[in-house]
Amino acid sequence: MSSHRERLKILVALSDKLWEDYDNTVISEEEFLRKMNLVRKEINNGFIKTLEELEVFTSELGYLVMSVPTKSFMYGSEKIIINKN
Image (cartoon, rainbow, N blue to C red; front, top):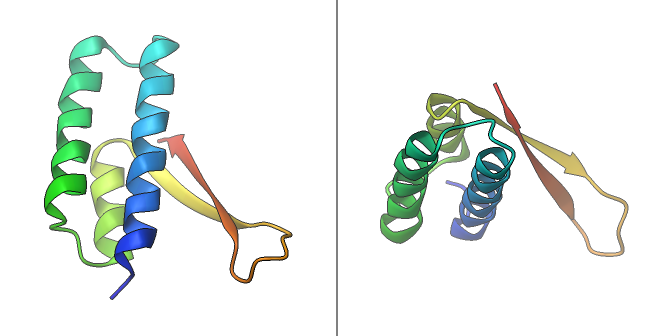
């Protein structure tokens, strides 16, 4: 099982990407609100328990999650990138 912190980090990155896409008129206001509501519910309720489930969730919303290792003094540091499918 993945950590709650990892899943939360990805969900926050997804919500940021949704806002960016809405702000740049890539998605409509209706689509933004619908998808943000689903992300908010997941952040609050935590039904997703694995990273695989989270990847399916983001894919169903039309996004792909990528994690890129970063050069850092902190062990295991990575950058989360969310792209629209």
